[in-house]
Length: 171
Image (cartoon, rainbow, N blue to C red; front, side, top):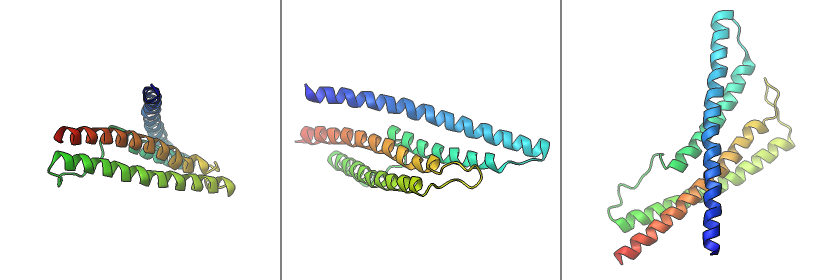
């Protein structure tokens, strides 16, 4: 009974994260495109350029890239290895190990991101042009790293379950 409740809770969290990720990538792409469009029109028509718009577009682009990495990890649509593995057991084992290593790496990344975000807050870093706190950008690593870590943990659990099934089936 307890396992079923945990599974249901994780599924709900996963669905909410998916909703947030999908909408965040749309918002960042549309926002960045709108800012760049206004910037191009201002340069061509009015012969005027705004460094603040360029910096804002850059900050949004950073968020967009990292959100894209999270979505890519969730959908398992990134570049993968494994063609050198010839057996079902070997492939299952390789998938489990690769997901575990990636998950552990992302745990380190999230810890580093947390420390970096905390440092950014302590030093009260501000951007040069917009004069906004750099935590706006630095928190991107922590937030998307946490989402990415959750996706990789979920994927690791699926791969581990699949590996158990493969090993049971083949005896």
